[in-house]
Length: 269
Ligand SMILES: Cc1cc2nc3c(=O)[nH]c(=O)nc-3n(C[C@H](O)[C@H](O)[C@H](O)COP(=O)(O)OP(=O)(O)OC[C@H]3O[C@@H](n4cnc5c(N)ncnc54)[C@H](O)[C@@H]3O)c2cc1C
Image 1 (cartoon, rainbow, N blue to C red):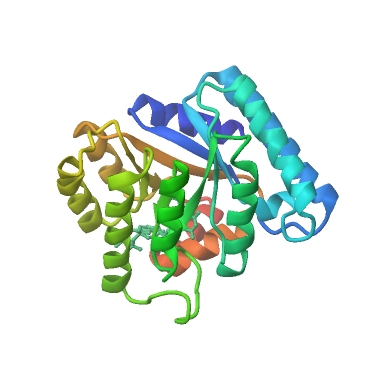
Image 2: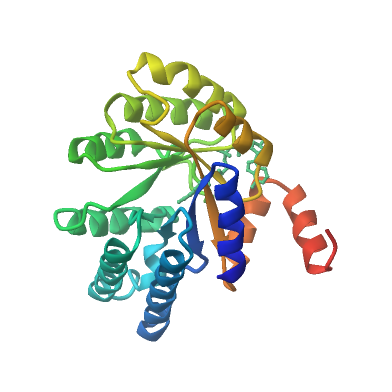
């Protein structure tokens, strides 16, 4: 937590806002889910005490959604309430996990939405169904993060291939820029970012009316360039001890990440 907050402070100094994710997903019992909740409650206190510019991201499977929805809801509401009471930016993003958890996660979100407006889900552009989900979130007036999608899904539910995913992403991004509330465009794809920069003003979006989001350590040059060009940029900063699954997804995206990881375990640079 200490190191994550130091990283956030450094990024804030470069004009980047952050979202902190305490790594963890798919816990199997109530005690583990409550430990995750307590970790987030401590994190909220530490963000408030340090005064850094950061909100939160989390996976609802880490709060118990897969085995006890009421437990997950109570844990999540505890986090939302504490964030609202203590943080300058109380927004808590619900990360999207694999397809099996999509419906439960969106249902979980919609059950909370009438009473809690400081949260919103992630939608994955590679899924065939996502335009309909974007339309629903636009109708509700929810803040959505759009990403390409990080899980290996079957062709029945998702498109494959760089060009197809890119074109789905652009279609969903345009839909969000047209009607969405403060969309978050989460990608490192320079072609997509370039296209969004061109299209956003034609859809009535000013630079402070949406944000780009990128992962910590990925394309820091692009992160700074976007800030210098006057865009809002939020960096997703994951931290903690439960890093294996996160690392696996990043390695599947890019093999070079395996070398970065091995070098850092070996104590190198
Ligand atoms: C802020 C944020 C939040 C996210 N949240 C979720 C979520 O909740 N659920 C979910 O399923 N997915 C999430 N993702 C991951 C996302 O779905 C993609 O898997 C990931 O961003 C890679 O896709 P891309 O859009 O960057 O494009 P790509 O076409 O994969 O990459 C474009 C270029 O970016 C660079 N790049 C991309 N990824 C990496 C990497 N890991 N390391 C180094 N360079 C890289 C490379 O130069 C690459 O050529 C999130 C991504 C971001 C940025």
